[in-house]
Image 1: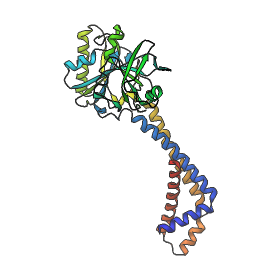
Image 2: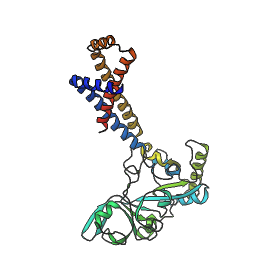
Image 3: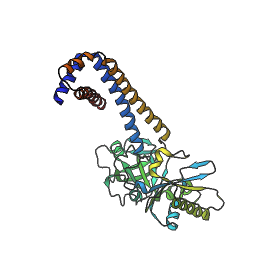
Image 4: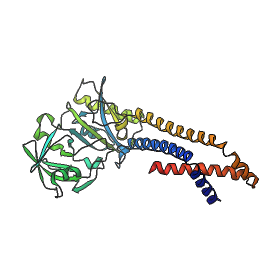
Length: 348
């Protein structure tokens, strides 16, 4: 019976080509637009979720009156770990200005360069392609690069152990190669150098300073903290108290921001670039639903307008002994087949 419905449907589509083209085109365009928007929404919501412990990683943010920032003091994460139970590990990033790297005749200015703690792999799940991730950042002159940078500077050669000249002065050695950073990571970098090198290169950026608000710090906790819970509020009060012990009178409050909230729910100063906006996300979701509803209404209007022309066909089928249920199934089948064709074209 299904084969019969399919044969009749295809015959009707061929017989009424203009109607079929308008119907299928309308549904295809509506579905394609909605699918594209929903895929974008899904991608925006997937940011930073590829990390193994994403639900237990939090960024420390600060709030000084109306100044809300994504940075905090260099010494804070270690100070918190020493005094607050439940912190498994931490990692800090601090961004460099444009850095000049050279390898032979190849010379480029790079913007995505950071200093980072050697605990990077203990907190995040960025994949290593080459090198020992446990020791890659132990040397002060070490540098981690991404696959793209390895190809850019060294071509098909093995980059491990190769040196790069930095800012026309010192040399750094490639000790590890990371797979290219996923596009849905809020932290985007090409070069990572060890935090231990900071004191050697810039005395004003020593690691133990509590007044240097120039670091993006991430804590890996033993367990997830529920948003707006008493446990989270108590943790943040302890953060404030510890900071006041070292910077008494400095009116700053600190908060924990879940890693998976950073991309869509950040409206902070001194933040990393490239964040999204959850309000735009909601607007586009409404637009996607609206487009799909309009496409469906257009489909139904065309079907209703054509129903009068098919009255004769229905009458003949009734005379031939067709049951009401069979007629209903035929029309539903036709609509379903048109919808499937439109969906396949929209996906394709």
